[in-house]
Image (cartoon, rainbow, N blue to C red):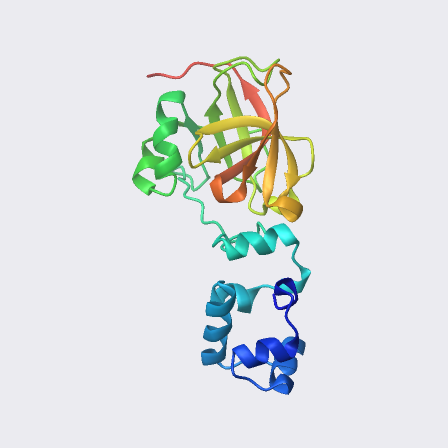
Length: 228
């Protein structure tokens, strides 16, 4: 952070009222006291959490700018995300179905146990038991040959850095609803995902991780109807 500001150790130590030797120790491996961390955080406009948790000199310029902008909560794409699920009477995880009419509510109430419990449920015995699944009804024709109205089942992705380029995914967003796209991973370089449609009439676009709620990797789809 000091080098990004074009400051020498003498410059920064003077601003923070430290000796240059003390500052050099902090930059190597010595843990500063809490009061000093506060001064660092205030001067560089970053959170104390970011100073403690991240090896800042290993992050890209874009990631550092995101931290300075307040988006340091999940800069690596590895923050623990708690997923709300429901289970059957036999103790097996259900697969909840999220129809189009429920998707606006899902984007805001995905963590609400009551909302998740209210969704229709079913099971797919052929899917491996070591994953958590959810099924979403898709809108539009951007992912042909999968038709509009089809039900797409995905497995939950905890760590977005592990998404392989070209993976079809259901992406739950804060502002754009639920989208089904082919994903290219830019979490490390740009803290975003590039979303591409199979229908070339739709242009690719980037989505910052701060706008993403959940990502589900495509597993299967079908066109069945459920009771309304």
